[in-house]
Image (cartoon, rainbow, N blue to C red; front, side):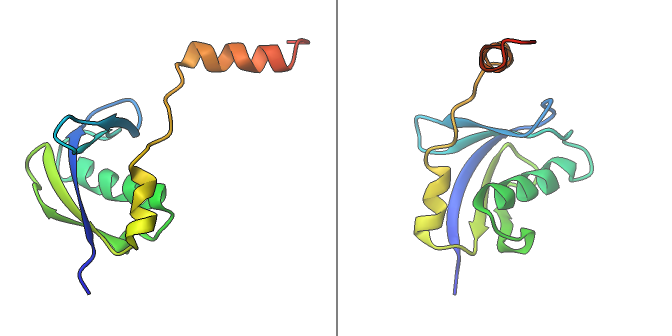
Length: 108
């Protein structure tokens, strides 16, 4: 049974891996916290997508784009589970996170 396919645009070499939203053409944009050397960014992408979906790493494969920023992944998941990636969690700026933490605990 073939898996569900998703198209992604990867920005490697970030400080951490995170979803950046959806591009105008429908591809998901993701920042990867690994350099594009010796396949490190590809391995981190597969690990990050599997973790985001809550599945094992073997359930996510790189179908095309090993040497480019535009990649196609195949995921052995249901279409419903794949929709988790449709609306990635909102990014909260680091300053806002710290402020919210202080507001909850005024003793700090």
